[in-house]
Length: 301
Image (tube, rainbow, N blue to C red):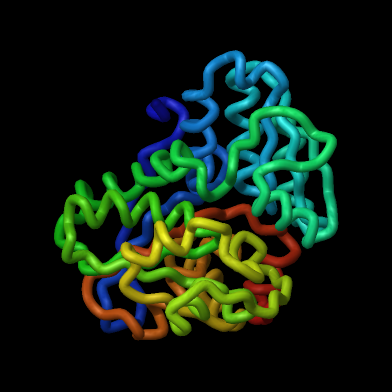
């Protein structure tokens, strides 16, 4: 369903100072610079014409928005994006280039739209960025590719934003290689899943916005705890300094541009907390140039 639109992205070895053998799954090389095209396009492609008649909408900080805008353009329908008011300008511009209409709202209203799968006053098919079955199935194609390309992998490290990427990949990997471990990674400034794992039940946390805008929240999306928890072997957090350092490592050693969320998995791998043959999912590369310059200068935005 997504062949010909989403790419089968490369899996490359990273030469790094680490006891683990680290491989990078480069989803930043997708046409929209993010894995989100897999799930978004899969959901829109499967939707019947009558459900698309009034267009589509989603709530997104930027990458899912681009995937939905891309899919809507392919189907010839309008796309409306509910975005938080701190959306990076790079991502806003990309959405608009694809024909999407961006409505920015306070972060609480944006998160409410994700929780409720709707936004007052805006009609259309809501493509949920996380818990839509077709979205998670599209994300799961990453897991299929990993098992085919690196069958002896020991663990997969995945950035946790809402859980749709983790659930999709882990479902595929665990079905084919049950012994492979799955670890989520969040910024310590916004880590509801790690806090929930530690507590044994869903927990809310204090949310602090950061340059890692594609991951982290104050709470879990309803239903994702039950879906993801049985599939996950560990939940890790990294500091903003560690995330920035991982962005630098990717740029300097692999010539890969990653956004903050896209570098979370590598940040955890470089910390030495997981051993073996590791795959780090580089989920996206849509970073504002000014933030990238700051990071390459050795600072944390």
